[in-house]
Length: 101
Image (cartoon, rainbow, N blue to C red; front, side):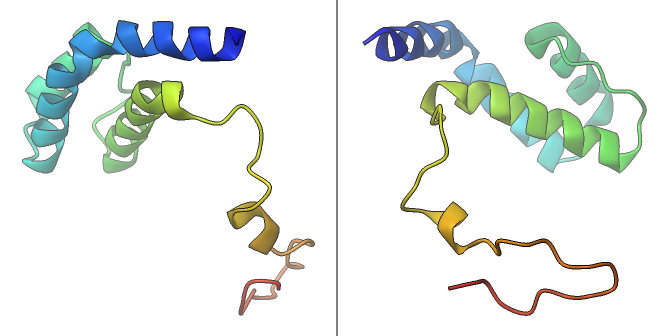
């Protein structure tokens, strides 16, 4: 029950940011970099390390993860994708050609 209450309170904290979050995604899609950088810093406390595309994308992923955190599972889901991931990582130079059954 405490987990449910914590999720609800986190969701209530995120509610005012939903509109700004949508605007941030539009700025990213339309490549409006100065306003994007400002919005990341002012609205989401995320500072871009540089203007490289990798850093912009990392900032968007971090903000998305933060906004979606109330919906995240606290543990791995046992009936979903984790069961289909190969048990052993590929050795160096090998390719994984299909998912394990």
